[in-house]
Image 1 (spheres, rainbow, N blue to C red):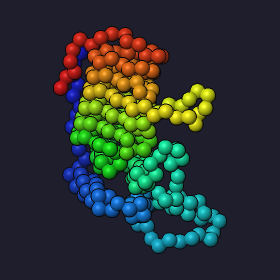
Image 2: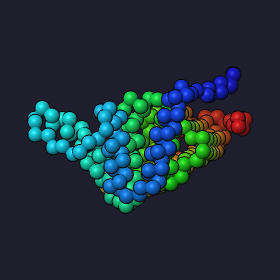
Image 3: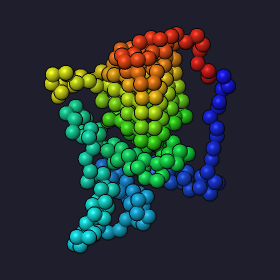
Length: 266
C-alpha cells in the first residue's frame, strides 16, 4: 500500500488575507469580551452578515404579517433568543455553559451556512472558537463540519487530532482525545449513560481515546469504554468496554479481531 499524505491547499492570497483578518478580529473580541451579553451581540451581528449579507441595524419590530418570518430569523441570530439541548440537562454548570453558549451557537450556525463547507476556513474557524469553548484544544487539530459536543468545558482535544464530519463528542461526563487520535464520519463518543428503568437517572463516566486511536465510520464508544493507544474501532462497531491498545475491535458489541503489528507512522 502507498502512504497518501494530506495535501496542502490554500485559497487565493486575497481571500486568505481576508479570512485571517476576520478570524483574528473575532479571536481578539472573544478574548476581550467575557460577558454573555457582549458575546451574544458579536455573534448576532456576524450571523446577520453571513446569512443576510448586510450589517445589523437598529432593532425593528415588524408589524406586517408578511414580514414576521424575516423577523423570527433575525431574532434567532441572537444566542439569547435560542435554547440549546444541553441547557435543559440537570447536571449542566449553568455559569460555565452560559459564557460558551454564544460561541457554540456561532459554531453551529457557521456550519449550517454556505461558509461551513469551506474546509480551509472551517478548520481555522472551529479551532479559534474551540480554544474559547473547550477545556483544552491542542495544535494542528482538524475539525470538519457538523461536529457537535455537549458542554464543551469538559472536552479535551490534544495535538494532531482529526474529527471528521457529523461526529458527536459527548463531553457530559468528561472526554479526552489524546494526541493523534482520529474520529471518522458519523461516529459517536459518549461519556454519560442512562439507567434502563429510569431515564432521568444519569451516570457520568469519563471516556478517553488514544493516543493514536482510530474510531472509524459510524463507530460508537459508550461511556467509560476507553479506546487504548494505537487501537482501532471498526466501522459500525459499538465499544461497550475498553478497546485494548494496539488492537482492532469490530462488531456489536465490539470484540478484538486482530492485533496490530506495527507502531503508528509518525
